[in-house]
Image 1 (tube, rainbow over the protein chains, first blue to last red):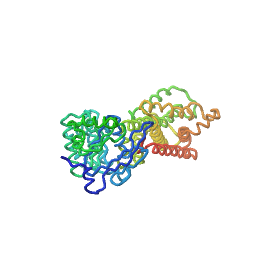
Image 2 (image 1 turned 60 degrees about the horizontal axis):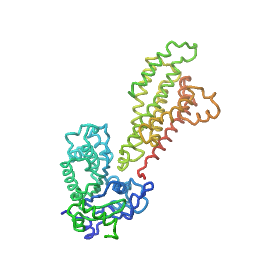
Image 3 (image 1 turned 45 degrees about the vertical axis):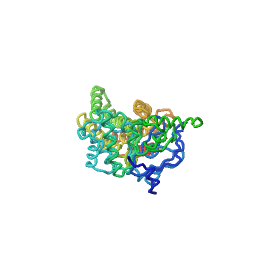
Image 4 (image 1 turned 90 degrees about the horizontal axis):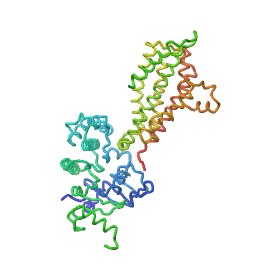
Length: 254
Length: 226
């Protein structure tokens, strides 16, 4: 069983890698996030889960510092999110693979490497880490969706970030690759990287130490997979999540 | 394409004008037209290329992503500016070489000045393109900025109707457009052996326009978006 950052936070007072306090984001007329507060410990893997449109990407963009926030604070590695010196230390993998289609794999990764001040060796290492050595000279436009996702991931790994934020990294990947990727995430976490991974697939929750369950911009639960099962009495996390939703929407009946 | 097309069009004009009679002692119509093309091409081509590339960068999300890296915004614009200006320089070199040597373009002023003005025009095109890309949602819209931004400048810069016979209000608009100064500078170089004060002032004005466009473009690159 993986350690939970929540337990860890209670045990020692090390500053959390990411602190979100009363975060509210209004996009247009919609409240995308409503008073969300979480503290994420260093070296943990935290899953951000919820149906699509629940605010996962908005939360992620707030942590990366690309989202204009309406209220509250987001602190990453003891700095306000989006601070200039965090740009070296926070990696971001966007939901759609953001790579240049008309460049080769190796050129894409080298480009990002140089943006972070790293050399070609770092780029090759990142390509090897996502298992694309055979495709390193292929044009990204000719790759499959899953391969492009991995190129996008390599472009973030190349910076050796302390906090790695991934927005639905496993969408469209086959099961074998998914397992590989999670294995790699665990490896990164063991080396001290803090990972935040969003997903709308509940089966992936079991890979995470902690879970943030979001719905309609609200934090329904901040828990661990085991705790969630115990609290709801459901074996499958999918059902557990549904039962949390039912409880939160009908508290009077509960 | 970028490299060869302007030269081909200039060659086409050479043949178009080859049988046109002209008064002895005045510059030949081809010289006139060719000079204008050497100024117009870098502006138009670079505007198009830059606005579309930058729009793609915005639409694909790569812009948002590279803005989360330590990259500085001005570095990004400078990199874009240099890359496209180098392409423009190659294009202008080829076009100038062909015009002056093969097609016998004759200017009173130095070919180097013509080349320099072509490059300044290209930088202006890059600046305007970067700026306009911010207002286009799709590549399709980006292309449409061409008739909005570039065509009026070309119409009012004195190629079609001399500027001093334009109605007053159009003259004022023309005065506010960078292409008017770029073309005036080219004419000056065509007619005078030395760099005239007017030409120098015109070049400075075009450079200033380009710098302002780049500055405004930098302001449209936001790290945080709603």
